[in-house]
Image 1 (cartoon, rainbow, N blue to C red):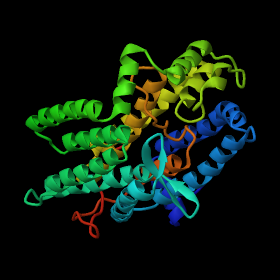
Image 2: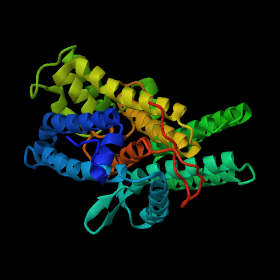
Image 3: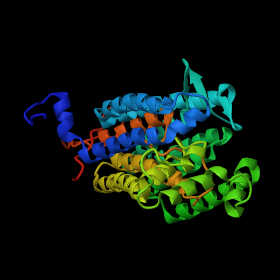
Image 4: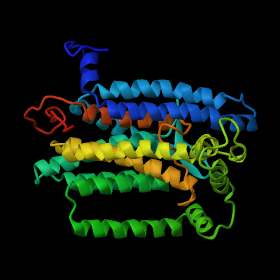
Amino acid sequence: MQSRLDKSPVATWWWTIDRWFLAAFLSLMGLGIVLSFAASPAVAERIGLDSFHFATRQIIFTVPALGVMLAVSFLDSRQIRRMALIMLCLMLVLMVAVLYIGVEVKGARRWVSLAGLSIQPSEFLKPAFVIMCAWLFAEHKRQPDIPGNLFAMLLLVLVVSLLVAQPDLGQTMLTTGTWGIMFFMAGLPWLWIVALGAAGVGGVFAAYTVFPHVALRIDKFLTGEGDTFQVDMGREALINGGWFGVGPGEGTVKRVIPDSHADFVFSVAGEEFGLIMCFFIMSIFAFIVLRGLNTALKEHDDFTRYAVGGLVTVFGLQAVINMCVNLQLVPAKGMTLPFISYGGSSQIAIAISMGMVLALTRKRPEKRKQMGFGLSQRAVPAE
Protein backbone atom coordinates (compact mmCIF):
# COMPACT_ATOMS: atom_id res chain seq x y z
CA MET A 1 0.00 0.00 0.00
CA GLN A 2 1.30 3.43 -0.97
CA SER A 3 1.78 6.02 1.80
CA ARG A 4 0.08 9.39 1.45
CA LEU A 5 3.46 10.98 2.21
CA ASP A 6 4.97 9.28 -0.84
CA LYS A 7 5.08 11.83 -3.70
CA SER A 8 6.24 9.44 -6.42
CA PRO A 9 4.17 9.33 -9.65
CA VAL A 10 2.72 5.90 -8.82
CA ALA A 11 1.75 6.90 -5.28
CA THR A 12 0.22 10.15 -6.51
CA TRP A 13 -1.69 8.20 -9.15
CA TRP A 14 -3.00 5.73 -6.55
CA TRP A 15 -4.35 8.42 -4.23
CA THR A 16 -5.93 10.46 -7.04
CA ILE A 17 -7.46 7.75 -9.22
CA ASP A 18 -11.19 6.93 -9.07
CA ARG A 19 -10.85 3.43 -7.62
CA TRP A 20 -14.54 2.64 -8.17
CA PHE A 21 -14.06 3.10 -11.91
CA LEU A 22 -10.84 1.09 -11.80
CA ALA A 23 -12.51 -1.78 -9.93
CA ALA A 24 -15.40 -1.83 -12.40
CA PHE A 25 -13.09 -1.97 -15.43
CA LEU A 26 -10.96 -4.73 -13.88
CA SER A 27 -14.13 -6.69 -13.09
CA LEU A 28 -15.24 -6.55 -16.72
CA MET A 29 -11.80 -7.64 -17.91
CA GLY A 30 -11.87 -10.57 -15.50
CA LEU A 31 -15.36 -11.56 -16.63
CA GLY A 32 -14.15 -11.41 -20.23
CA ILE A 33 -11.47 -14.01 -19.50
CA VAL A 34 -13.81 -16.27 -17.53
CA LEU A 35 -16.55 -16.14 -20.15
CA SER A 36 -14.03 -16.70 -22.93
CA PHE A 37 -13.20 -20.07 -21.39
CA ALA A 38 -16.93 -20.83 -21.30
CA ALA A 39 -17.86 -19.58 -24.77
CA SER A 40 -14.90 -20.11 -27.09
CA PRO A 41 -13.89 -23.83 -26.96
CA ALA A 42 -16.86 -24.97 -29.07
CA VAL A 43 -16.10 -22.31 -31.69
CA ALA A 44 -12.39 -23.21 -31.79
CA GLU A 45 -13.10 -26.93 -32.14
CA ARG A 46 -15.64 -26.27 -34.90
CA ILE A 47 -13.00 -24.60 -37.07
CA GLY A 48 -10.22 -27.07 -36.24
CA LEU A 49 -8.25 -25.07 -33.66
CA ASP A 50 -7.08 -25.93 -30.17
CA SER A 51 -9.97 -25.81 -27.69
CA PHE A 52 -8.53 -22.89 -25.76
CA HIS A 53 -7.18 -20.97 -28.76
CA PHE A 54 -9.53 -18.00 -28.35
CA ALA A 55 -9.41 -18.09 -24.55
CA THR A 56 -5.62 -17.91 -24.63
CA ARG A 57 -5.71 -15.05 -27.09
CA GLN A 58 -8.26 -13.26 -24.92
CA ILE A 59 -5.72 -13.31 -22.08
CA ILE A 60 -3.00 -12.16 -24.48
CA PHE A 61 -5.21 -9.23 -25.55
CA THR A 62 -6.22 -8.37 -21.99
CA VAL A 63 -2.66 -7.99 -20.66
CA PRO A 64 -1.61 -5.18 -23.04
CA ALA A 65 -5.11 -3.67 -22.80
CA LEU A 66 -4.68 -3.39 -19.03
CA GLY A 67 -1.23 -1.89 -19.50
CA VAL A 68 -2.53 0.65 -22.02
CA MET A 69 -5.45 1.64 -19.78
CA LEU A 70 -3.20 2.21 -16.79
CA ALA A 71 -0.60 4.08 -18.86
CA VAL A 72 -3.23 6.44 -20.32
CA SER A 73 -4.67 7.04 -16.84
CA PHE A 74 -1.37 8.74 -15.84
CA LEU A 75 -1.88 11.52 -18.43
CA ASP A 76 -3.31 14.96 -17.74
CA SER A 77 -6.05 16.62 -19.78
CA ARG A 78 -3.60 18.49 -22.00
CA GLN A 79 -1.80 15.23 -22.86
CA ILE A 80 -5.13 13.50 -23.45
CA ARG A 81 -6.08 16.13 -26.03
CA ARG A 82 -2.74 15.83 -27.79
CA MET A 83 -2.97 12.06 -27.83
CA ALA A 84 -6.52 12.26 -29.21
CA LEU A 85 -5.48 14.65 -31.99
CA ILE A 86 -2.69 12.31 -33.11
CA MET A 87 -5.03 9.30 -32.94
CA LEU A 88 -7.73 11.12 -34.87
CA CYS A 89 -5.41 12.11 -37.71
CA LEU A 90 -3.88 8.64 -37.93
CA MET A 91 -7.22 6.82 -37.82
CA LEU A 92 -8.79 9.10 -40.42
CA VAL A 93 -5.93 8.19 -42.76
CA LEU A 94 -6.45 4.49 -42.02
CA MET A 95 -10.23 4.86 -42.48
CA VAL A 96 -9.54 6.11 -46.00
CA ALA A 97 -6.92 3.42 -46.61
CA VAL A 98 -9.24 0.64 -45.46
CA LEU A 99 -11.61 1.47 -48.34
CA TYR A 100 -8.87 0.53 -50.81
CA ILE A 101 -6.61 -2.01 -49.11
CA GLY A 102 -8.86 -3.25 -46.31
CA VAL A 103 -9.91 -6.86 -45.87
CA GLU A 104 -13.45 -7.43 -47.14
CA VAL A 105 -15.64 -9.47 -44.79
CA LYS A 106 -19.32 -10.06 -45.60
CA GLY A 107 -19.36 -7.21 -48.08
CA ALA A 108 -17.77 -4.62 -45.75
CA ARG A 109 -14.21 -3.27 -45.51
CA ARG A 110 -13.47 -2.44 -41.88
CA TRP A 111 -10.09 -4.05 -41.20
CA VAL A 112 -6.60 -3.21 -42.35
CA SER A 113 -3.47 -5.30 -41.83
CA LEU A 114 -0.39 -3.51 -40.49
CA ALA A 115 2.84 -5.36 -39.66
CA GLY A 116 0.91 -8.61 -39.53
CA LEU A 117 -1.72 -7.23 -37.14
CA SER A 118 -5.37 -6.72 -38.12
CA ILE A 119 -6.67 -3.35 -36.95
CA GLN A 120 -10.19 -1.93 -37.08
CA PRO A 121 -9.56 1.83 -37.32
CA SER A 122 -13.13 2.77 -36.42
CA GLU A 123 -12.67 1.31 -32.93
CA PHE A 124 -9.72 3.61 -32.21
CA LEU A 125 -11.39 6.53 -33.95
CA LYS A 126 -14.25 6.66 -31.41
CA PRO A 127 -12.34 7.83 -28.30
CA ALA A 128 -10.31 10.33 -30.34
CA PHE A 129 -13.49 11.66 -31.96
CA VAL A 130 -15.18 12.08 -28.57
CA ILE A 131 -12.21 13.93 -27.06
CA MET A 132 -11.80 16.31 -30.00
CA CYS A 133 -15.53 17.08 -30.14
CA ALA A 134 -15.48 17.73 -26.38
CA TRP A 135 -12.63 20.18 -26.87
CA LEU A 136 -14.42 21.93 -29.76
CA PHE A 137 -17.67 22.23 -27.77
CA ALA A 138 -15.74 23.55 -24.76
CA GLU A 139 -13.88 26.11 -26.88
CA HIS A 140 -17.15 27.42 -28.29
CA LYS A 141 -18.59 27.62 -24.77
CA ARG A 142 -15.53 29.54 -23.57
CA GLN A 143 -15.41 31.89 -26.54
CA PRO A 144 -18.67 31.96 -28.59
CA ASP A 145 -16.88 33.68 -31.47
CA ILE A 146 -14.83 30.49 -32.00
CA PRO A 147 -16.86 28.22 -34.36
CA GLY A 148 -16.22 25.09 -32.28
CA ASN A 149 -19.74 23.72 -32.75
CA LEU A 150 -19.46 24.14 -36.51
CA PHE A 151 -16.10 22.36 -36.62
CA ALA A 152 -17.57 19.55 -34.47
CA MET A 153 -20.41 19.18 -36.99
CA LEU A 154 -17.96 19.05 -39.89
CA LEU A 155 -15.90 16.44 -38.06
CA LEU A 156 -19.06 14.38 -37.50
CA VAL A 157 -19.92 14.57 -41.21
CA LEU A 158 -16.39 13.44 -42.14
CA VAL A 159 -16.41 10.50 -39.71
CA VAL A 160 -19.94 9.41 -40.64
CA SER A 161 -19.08 9.58 -44.35
CA LEU A 162 -16.11 7.26 -43.87
CA LEU A 163 -18.13 4.84 -41.73
CA VAL A 164 -20.99 4.68 -44.25
CA ALA A 165 -18.49 4.09 -47.06
CA GLN A 166 -17.23 0.87 -45.39
CA PRO A 167 -20.23 0.38 -44.69
CA ASP A 168 -20.54 0.17 -40.89
CA LEU A 169 -23.96 1.51 -39.97
CA GLY A 170 -23.82 0.23 -36.40
CA GLN A 171 -20.76 2.34 -35.62
CA THR A 172 -22.36 5.21 -37.54
CA MET A 173 -25.42 5.15 -35.26
CA LEU A 174 -23.23 4.76 -32.17
CA THR A 175 -20.98 7.68 -33.11
CA THR A 176 -23.86 9.93 -34.14
CA GLY A 177 -25.84 9.17 -30.98
CA THR A 178 -22.86 9.91 -28.76
CA TRP A 179 -22.16 13.17 -30.61
CA GLY A 180 -25.81 14.21 -30.18
CA ILE A 181 -25.70 13.57 -26.43
CA MET A 182 -22.46 15.57 -26.11
CA PHE A 183 -23.99 18.42 -28.11
CA PHE A 184 -27.00 18.30 -25.78
CA MET A 185 -24.66 18.54 -22.79
CA ALA A 186 -23.04 21.56 -24.44
CA GLY A 187 -26.37 23.41 -24.53
CA LEU A 188 -27.92 22.27 -27.80
CA PRO A 189 -31.10 24.31 -28.51
CA TRP A 190 -34.38 22.35 -28.70
CA LEU A 191 -34.78 23.29 -32.36
CA TRP A 192 -31.52 21.52 -33.09
CA ILE A 193 -32.67 18.48 -31.11
CA VAL A 194 -35.80 18.20 -33.26
CA ALA A 195 -33.80 18.74 -36.45
CA LEU A 196 -31.17 16.16 -35.55
CA GLY A 197 -33.85 13.68 -34.47
CA ALA A 198 -35.57 14.09 -37.83
CA ALA A 199 -32.23 13.68 -39.60
CA GLY A 200 -31.60 10.47 -37.64
CA VAL A 201 -34.96 9.01 -38.64
CA GLY A 202 -34.30 10.04 -42.23
CA GLY A 203 -30.90 8.36 -42.08
CA VAL A 204 -32.45 5.07 -40.95
CA PHE A 205 -34.93 5.15 -43.84
CA ALA A 206 -32.12 6.02 -46.25
CA ALA A 207 -30.01 3.11 -44.97
CA TYR A 208 -32.99 0.77 -45.34
CA THR A 209 -33.44 1.94 -48.94
CA VAL A 210 -29.80 2.06 -50.05
CA PHE A 211 -28.19 -0.92 -48.29
CA PRO A 212 -29.76 -4.34 -49.01
CA HIS A 213 -28.13 -5.99 -45.99
CA VAL A 214 -29.68 -3.38 -43.69
CA ALA A 215 -33.11 -3.92 -45.23
CA LEU A 216 -32.66 -7.68 -44.88
CA ARG A 217 -31.75 -7.46 -41.18
CA ILE A 218 -34.63 -5.14 -40.39
CA ASP A 219 -37.09 -7.29 -42.35
CA LYS A 220 -35.88 -10.44 -40.58
CA PHE A 221 -36.25 -8.71 -37.23
CA LEU A 222 -39.77 -7.49 -37.94
CA THR A 223 -41.12 -10.60 -39.68
CA GLY A 224 -39.04 -13.38 -38.12
CA GLU A 225 -38.50 -14.82 -41.59
CA GLY A 226 -35.19 -15.70 -43.20
CA ASP A 227 -31.94 -16.77 -41.55
CA THR A 228 -32.35 -15.80 -37.90
CA PHE A 229 -30.52 -18.85 -36.57
CA GLN A 230 -27.86 -17.06 -34.51
CA VAL A 231 -30.18 -14.60 -32.76
CA ASP A 232 -32.74 -17.36 -32.16
CA MET A 233 -30.08 -19.53 -30.57
CA GLY A 234 -28.84 -16.61 -28.48
CA ARG A 235 -32.30 -16.12 -27.04
CA GLU A 236 -32.68 -19.89 -26.59
CA ALA A 237 -29.44 -20.01 -24.60
CA LEU A 238 -30.75 -17.33 -22.23
CA ILE A 239 -34.02 -19.22 -21.78
CA ASN A 240 -32.18 -22.50 -21.24
CA GLY A 241 -30.07 -20.98 -18.46
CA GLY A 242 -33.00 -19.74 -16.39
CA TRP A 243 -32.22 -17.81 -13.23
CA PHE A 244 -29.16 -19.72 -12.05
CA GLY A 245 -27.74 -21.31 -15.22
CA VAL A 246 -26.89 -24.88 -16.11
CA GLY A 247 -23.38 -24.62 -14.65
CA PRO A 248 -19.91 -23.72 -15.99
CA GLY A 249 -19.09 -25.75 -19.11
CA GLU A 250 -22.52 -27.40 -19.16
CA GLY A 251 -24.16 -25.19 -21.77
CA THR A 252 -25.47 -26.96 -24.86
CA VAL A 253 -27.10 -24.23 -26.95
CA LYS A 254 -23.86 -22.20 -26.95
CA ARG A 255 -22.18 -24.98 -28.97
CA VAL A 256 -24.16 -24.14 -32.09
CA ILE A 257 -23.89 -20.33 -31.93
CA PRO A 258 -21.26 -19.29 -34.52
CA ASP A 259 -20.17 -16.12 -32.66
CA SER A 260 -20.71 -17.32 -29.10
CA HIS A 261 -17.27 -16.01 -28.06
CA ALA A 262 -17.78 -12.58 -29.61
CA ASP A 263 -21.13 -10.92 -30.25
CA PHE A 264 -23.15 -13.50 -28.29
CA VAL A 265 -21.00 -14.00 -25.19
CA PHE A 266 -23.81 -12.40 -23.16
CA SER A 267 -26.09 -15.30 -24.14
CA VAL A 268 -23.43 -17.79 -23.04
CA ALA A 269 -23.20 -16.03 -19.68
CA GLY A 270 -26.97 -16.40 -19.34
CA GLU A 271 -27.00 -20.08 -20.23
CA GLU A 272 -24.16 -21.21 -17.98
CA PHE A 273 -24.43 -18.75 -15.08
CA GLY A 274 -28.06 -17.69 -15.32
CA LEU A 275 -29.95 -14.43 -15.52
CA ILE A 276 -28.38 -13.50 -12.19
CA MET A 277 -25.03 -13.21 -13.97
CA CYS A 278 -26.65 -11.20 -16.79
CA PHE A 279 -28.07 -8.74 -14.27
CA PHE A 280 -24.68 -8.53 -12.58
CA ILE A 281 -22.97 -7.69 -15.90
CA MET A 282 -25.66 -5.14 -16.70
CA SER A 283 -25.25 -3.56 -13.27
CA ILE A 284 -21.51 -3.04 -13.81
CA PHE A 285 -22.12 -1.26 -17.11
CA ALA A 286 -24.92 0.80 -15.56
CA PHE A 287 -22.67 1.74 -12.63
CA ILE A 288 -19.91 2.95 -14.98
CA VAL A 289 -22.27 5.03 -17.10
CA LEU A 290 -24.17 6.55 -14.16
CA ARG A 291 -21.02 7.30 -12.18
CA GLY A 292 -19.45 8.84 -15.27
CA LEU A 293 -22.46 11.04 -16.00
CA ASN A 294 -22.73 12.03 -12.33
CA THR A 295 -19.05 12.98 -12.28
CA ALA A 296 -19.49 14.95 -15.50
CA LEU A 297 -22.52 16.75 -14.04
CA LYS A 298 -20.48 17.95 -11.04
CA GLU A 299 -17.40 18.85 -13.07
CA HIS A 300 -16.58 22.57 -13.41
CA ASP A 301 -14.32 22.25 -16.44
CA ASP A 302 -16.35 22.15 -19.67
CA PHE A 303 -13.87 20.03 -21.59
CA THR A 304 -13.68 17.39 -18.88
CA ARG A 305 -17.46 17.36 -18.48
CA TYR A 306 -18.13 16.78 -22.18
CA ALA A 307 -15.25 14.30 -22.58
CA VAL A 308 -16.15 12.08 -19.62
CA GLY A 309 -19.84 12.23 -20.53
CA GLY A 310 -19.11 11.29 -24.13
CA LEU A 311 -16.70 8.45 -23.32
CA VAL A 312 -19.04 6.71 -20.87
CA THR A 313 -21.96 7.28 -23.25
CA VAL A 314 -20.30 5.53 -26.18
CA PHE A 315 -19.18 2.77 -23.80
CA GLY A 316 -22.69 2.30 -22.43
CA LEU A 317 -24.49 2.53 -25.79
CA GLN A 318 -22.22 -0.13 -27.26
CA ALA A 319 -22.99 -2.45 -24.34
CA VAL A 320 -26.73 -1.78 -24.61
CA ILE A 321 -26.76 -2.53 -28.36
CA ASN A 322 -24.88 -5.80 -27.86
CA MET A 323 -27.15 -6.97 -25.04
CA CYS A 324 -30.30 -5.94 -26.92
CA VAL A 325 -29.18 -8.00 -29.93
CA ASN A 326 -28.70 -11.01 -27.63
CA LEU A 327 -32.18 -10.44 -26.19
CA GLN A 328 -33.61 -10.04 -29.73
CA LEU A 329 -34.82 -6.52 -28.95
CA VAL A 330 -33.08 -4.90 -31.93
CA PRO A 331 -31.95 -6.16 -35.36
CA ALA A 332 -28.70 -8.12 -35.36
CA LYS A 333 -25.56 -5.99 -35.46
CA GLY A 334 -21.97 -7.08 -35.12
CA MET A 335 -20.97 -5.07 -32.05
CA THR A 336 -18.86 -6.37 -29.20
CA LEU A 337 -19.65 -6.26 -25.49
CA PRO A 338 -16.93 -3.95 -24.10
CA PHE A 339 -14.06 -5.74 -22.33
CA ILE A 340 -15.96 -9.06 -22.45
CA SER A 341 -16.32 -10.08 -26.09
CA TYR A 342 -13.34 -11.59 -27.89
CA GLY A 343 -11.38 -9.15 -30.04
CA GLY A 344 -7.99 -7.47 -30.00
CA SER A 345 -8.79 -4.11 -31.64
CA SER A 346 -11.92 -3.69 -29.56
CA GLN A 347 -10.13 -4.59 -26.33
CA ILE A 348 -7.25 -2.15 -26.83
CA ALA A 349 -9.47 0.67 -28.11
CA ILE A 350 -11.87 0.37 -25.18
CA ALA A 351 -8.89 0.28 -22.80
CA ILE A 352 -7.70 3.58 -24.28
CA SER A 353 -11.19 5.07 -23.83
CA MET A 354 -11.50 3.99 -20.23
CA GLY A 355 -7.91 5.02 -19.52
CA MET A 356 -8.97 8.48 -20.64
CA VAL A 357 -11.92 8.35 -18.23
CA LEU A 358 -9.58 7.40 -15.39
CA ALA A 359 -7.18 10.20 -16.34
CA LEU A 360 -9.84 12.89 -16.61
CA THR A 361 -11.56 11.95 -13.34
CA ARG A 362 -8.39 11.98 -11.24
CA LYS A 363 -8.30 14.52 -8.39
CA ARG A 364 -6.00 17.43 -9.20
CA PRO A 365 -5.38 20.82 -7.61
CA GLU A 366 -7.61 23.50 -9.05
CA LYS A 367 -5.72 26.13 -11.00
CA ARG A 368 -6.60 29.01 -13.21
CA LYS A 369 -6.95 27.60 -16.68
CA GLN A 370 -6.98 28.54 -20.29
CA MET A 371 -8.46 26.01 -22.65
CA GLY A 372 -6.09 24.96 -25.36
CA PHE A 373 -3.72 22.20 -26.31
CA GLY A 374 -0.93 23.53 -24.17
CA LEU A 375 -2.47 25.62 -21.39
CA SER A 376 -5.40 23.78 -19.85
CA GLN A 377 -5.49 22.52 -16.27
CA ARG A 378 -8.63 20.83 -15.05
CA ALA A 379 -10.61 21.41 -11.87
CA VAL A 380 -11.07 19.04 -8.98
CA PRO A 381 -14.10 16.79 -9.60
CA ALA A 382 -16.68 16.59 -6.87
CA GLU A 383 -16.79 13.33 -5.00
